Length: 546
Image (cartoon, rainbow, N blue to C red; front, side, top):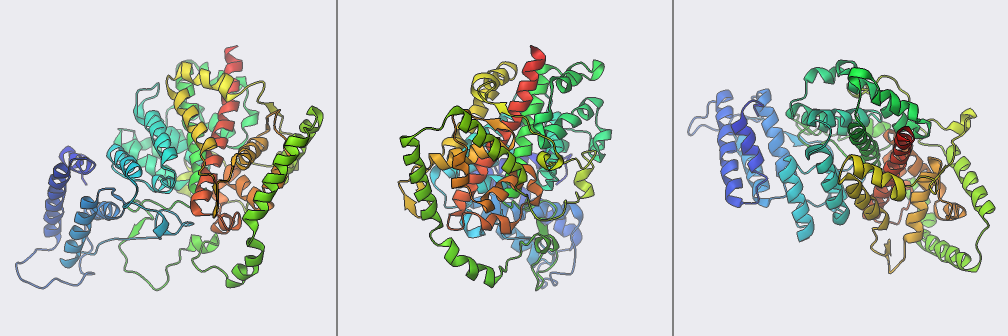
């Protein structure tokens, strides 16, 4: 599609209309444009047999249109558009033009494609999908995977839309560039690519995409905050805030800084979700499709390197079977016993504090993935300056200080600060945190009518514990009872070094649970991480203000 052709842009946007006749008219215009371009490559005689499919590789702008049609044929929430795109691609192929095919098997490398629905969903999910498609011109893979939990997805999309597109302190291109900076901290090329496209579409200067040094000094100054928040938020001080707010001609206003902090924490945690669910590239983007014919081997080198091949080792499956059966029942029995212990006796404050410190120290010793340090691809790494990443402080003799929620909490302090400087966003974030934390279907695997609140609280508090955040009223002894080692390794990797998450790690925890339950876990991890980072940033801003 010609970027400068506003008419063409409008046609693609019309495909998101809820009016079937508008979609039909837009599809008709797109079909005519495609056939016009095809004619420019292959003259179409009236009754001559089609040349073989490999005959004419299409021009690059036609390639882009065909890739977009492929995406719509698989991902558009409107049946009529999907069907028309399939029909149009077949016609193009019959005329001797090679058409693209998807790479990979659906929106996630970890979850079977047949479990992730685009069509035949319930009316509420359908409506959410249609709204998302109308707003962005795409139904991205993250939304499709979050579609297991439509209540949460609705909240998430509403918040993200507000942060990126509604009135706010920062200009639109700054917002997308900050998203790129944040996602690049974890080498998350999926999110970087999405926002590179959005950045250019809203008028961002392509020179900035050559690296942070090509961006304005004001954005360069944000690099240090981005780095600390992503990897060691406990090191953030009011001096860091002061450096940004008092940088003479490159200074940030408080409102701009709050907007930037919310965007950074949003995209750091969304990178965790992206890797934790094995999100694949969008069909129409690089890595999402190919014009090459199918080969015998479907393997991608990176899949083999990460242990993500389709073929699981049969001996692993057999060896695990007995250990796995009864996993859910054991966990439910532990929850019951802990509840009984809670009712019988309460640990002293000193004992509670000791248990927290022990769990915090142990969490530092939990290894992340066994792989070596990931080497960032040049394409992503150019957006940040150095390979500074999460390190286990205790291994280096350093100490993560304890952050007492009683002294500074989201509910009593952070929420009101965000709402004051960036109206409505505090409320949107609070709704999203509450939704993830309280979301339950009262099920565990095949068991119904189960109160899962104890388990959800253990997961949330374990993540905050890794960041040094302590709730005085929580008994951290419960964490070791409820979260086994493989689950802790998965949590720590996904929260601290998400780029190292592999399919094997995803499969190794909660092996009897549904994929929807594992996605729910990933929503909890994402929101708990975002709130932890936000607490450190907002506390530093509060200290600067006072």
